[in-house]
Image (cartoon, rainbow, N blue to C red; front, side):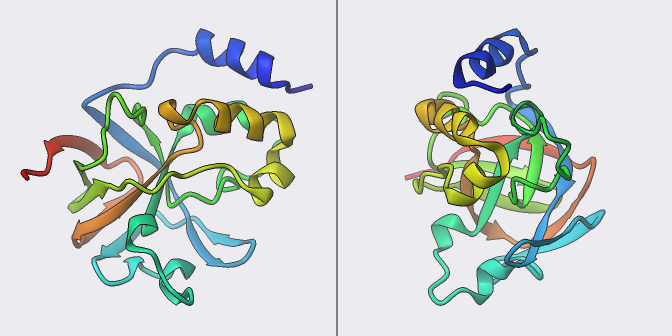
Length: 176
C-alpha cells in the first residue's frame, strides 16, 4: 500500500532526474474530461497551447497554466495500480528535474522546437489526482511543492513541434 512516508522513502532511493537538459517521455492531449490522446508528436502554439488540448476551450484559459509538465519518475512512483501512463493528465511527462531550485519561475525551456517559460502558477494535486492515485499520493506531492512533484505550469513563448524522445534544454532566465 502506498503511503506518503513510503513514497518519500522510494523517491529518496530513486536516481535523481537530470538537470539542465532532459527528454520528453510521453505526450498527453486532454481531448475532453477523462479522455486523453497520446500522440508521438504535437504542435504547440502561443494561442492554443498544445494543439487539440481542452485547455484552449476553457471558459477563461489561463496563460500561466497553458502547458503542464510532470516528472516521469514521480508519475511512475504514484501509479502503482497500473493505470495508463497518461493518467496524471499532464501534457508532457519528462525526465527532467522540475524543482524550483533547478527551474525558477521565468526559466525558459526549449522542448522540441517550441520555447516554454516556467510560470508562477503552482501546479498542485487536485480531486482528480486523489481519485486516480489516492490520498497519500496527493498528500506527498502537495507537501513538497518546492520540488514540484505534481509538476509545473508553463506558458508558450514560441510555437513549435514536440515529439516523444525530443530533448529539453534549459535556456536560463528571461531577461528583465
